[in-house]
Image (cartoon, rainbow, N blue to C red; front, side):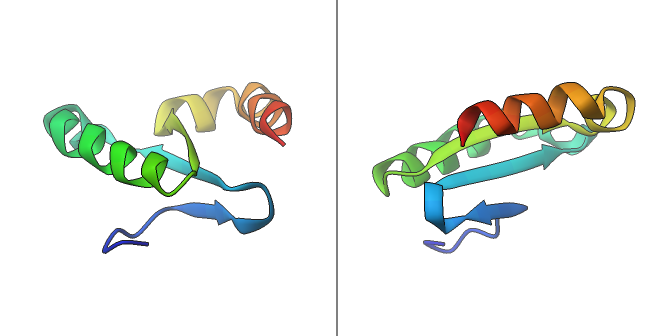
Length: 68
């Protein structure tokens, strides 16, 4: 997608889901630019940290469902 590889993409609803590891703490500007580009493509981006996915999967699923 415009030179980016996303973790998950649902074309039907225009939703990008990113699961961020620790490295994303060091690349916030790059992530912000990436979100700008994806937003310009009329895509919605939601992000979760690895810890959130591993420890609170049901909350993550609920947030994804709310975006659908």
